[in-house]
Length: 559
Ligand code: ARG
Image (tube, rainbow, N blue to C red; front, side, top):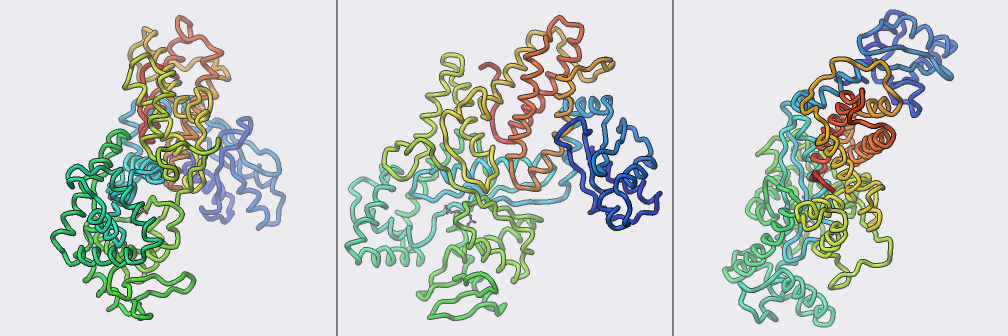
């Protein structure tokens, strides 16, 4: 149930009884930082008092007096300069917790939100012939979490992996392979490809002819030259095998792979359509699109070739035709902000998709705390090195030789680090924090989950859906926990609205902290409160499991 919405309704009714004119958007409902001021609070009386030129406290009291008692509000009070505070009934809070415990009911209610709506999310999108780097890891983790969040809210979700497999750089790669590779094409590895590509750029600094060679090879590729295509396809195959390994390890599954090359045959038509719309301009032989407040985008280079921008335009058109999405989300680094601004503006000018229904989640960088991360090659950070190191540390946290748990902890730790702060912020990669068992980390949540599971193992109460009798004295630790539970739905909604899985990550940490405080101070097994406390444990399990699942993090039974 959307409690904040219900509270808004109550206030609207009360205001209309008092003949106060108020619009719904004016009513802001918040959780007071201090629970002694209730579960929800609004400053609407202060806003209205200003308009009506009356004392805000008195008005707040008037509104409170005319509020009809509802079945979920225990009491309403006035505090401070005119805040109206709502206190929820414990029975109601427990009813909400029961729904979470009945996972299917909870999920059914959630899925009403996105009924009939479709979103497309463009995420991961690594570039072929390069190892999967830490930047694409961010996109993969955040993108998958957002996909999961929209899915649980009932949206029809389409994940689309816009692999980088087209453009002049692949002409360079073919040139490098033709020039220096001595191996059979079938024996090439992703490392070989990366080395060849790096070598090309090094040599090109002194040998300018190389750039032309690369361009020529790309021109051949574009014309469908057999040899060029064969070498290029090999590079794709080698890279895809590598990417699949990464996805498997991360437990990520992207619905579609449409590399940039997929759009190659559609580019002519799209370019023509854009030119026909009359929004382009010739500039030194190239075709560009100008905007009011953004530098121009290049639709076609002076030599007639297309660009990353052109391919993204074709991509939007394809997605609109195929899936008719209400929303398109791009999970791509912040360095492409200008690019997406141009893409969105153009799509709007074309009448394909309104600007406000396209979102670029411009994720920040990953920074290292303690000096440099040691890698095999220096500058690029290889995901496999990061995972190896995480596995090493996870070994100390899992039962010996329990590879499944070790992997879940290692991967969970890395993912949580990506997901626990707002995507737009830079993330600090600090091993001690990432793997900490008592800090804000993935392992901490997995550990709390395992702790709950061991309680459920010990108790004789094996099945329990409802709490039939609410205990007379719910103590503070229990109450603090119950008051976390009912916010789960709100948090999932907020995460979707803000495109930020961190809302859920933070919420889960809060639940885990409250559970651990409760656990430290209260015995559970063989106490007269056992029924109730086991119930609280079950709801915690359900929240941690569903929440971690949304983040793409596995739970473990023992740690
Ligand atoms: N392959 C690109 C890169 O690594 C990201 C692609 C993002 N998606 C898009 N539709 N442009 O920079």
